[in-house]
Figure: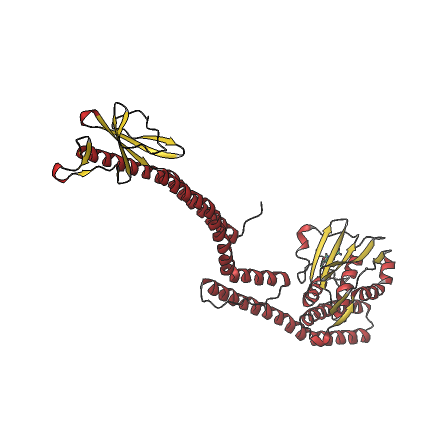
Length: 450
Ligand code: ADP
């Protein structure tokens, strides 16, 4: 399963939290508040009915309320409760509301509910003197209706609130994560392009993310410094070795010319061979050093198809010696890139040279072109001995050779692919390799199209 980003996780969790919170509120209002309001209504009706039952009295067929000195005519509506007086299960005084069924049997001191025409009544009966029963009625429809309205409003509002919270939260989180996203993007592009001169913009707010960005930048400073030191070191060493090697070769050749001793001649020839080998290392190291800097004036628009065809032609003799077939497939699109001609020739010479060197007798070399967005991908495939998986990552390291033979007869020093990689990176491209042992190897070079 694909891992969720932190942004997604936060939005998911707090949206879930909001939904649960609103859900609980909804449940609470729907059940507990309904119950509480009902309990309150029951208390109101019993208190009012009991109180009134205690103060009602009859005089000349009329009903009065209050103490004898301070009596008022009873009107049948008090504190939201409607009253009726029953005698022998019949309404004797007062009038039943139209939506109440007055035949509701008398049950003393117990609150009941009657629903008539969607009107919810609470009914409560109290025994009085002279065989009368005082009945109180309380209309709870409004309470039920109000609760239904609240529930309806919550029903409509809650998805909107959750949506607003999720969308609003998404934008706030996205904004807050932008500096981290930038750190990630910079780190990724440093990794892909191996360009350690890139830095993260720390942003304006001086928060933890800002500190993190500054710390990463400091670390990059150190990495860049140590890489530069290492590059400078190998460049200095190569420069320093060049002159003594030239002198040594000249001296050895002079000695070779002067002596007639066959044994001595053979020894001097071995020395010259080794000096030439060392010179080739130094030259390759200097090539690598040069391939790290390219001024805009040294760049031009190059048709890579033409350049590769031209490069391949210079290998005709070597191909014939090993009975190899080299094909450069013609692309159906423009293959123009911006680059340095000499350096790009080096790239493809090295790759073709390797494809010849490590190929089988009578094998094939195929060069093809693919367009990938704004990039050109050139593949150089051979039918050679291939490279074992454990070596694949390391073959671009300087001095790395798969078989460690130190005979130096073919001047294989393991610097060719380092140079290739260095030049490709300098052209803002990348190089990949795929290989199957005993089947062959394919190098893929991606370069931005001009
Ligand atoms: P070298 O000078 O030894 O050829 P490179 O840097 O060009 O150095 O290559 C490094 C190593 O990668 C080689 O020693 C070889 O083992 C391996 N290699 C390079 N290209 C190929 C290829 N086309 N097929 C098989 N092995 C290869």
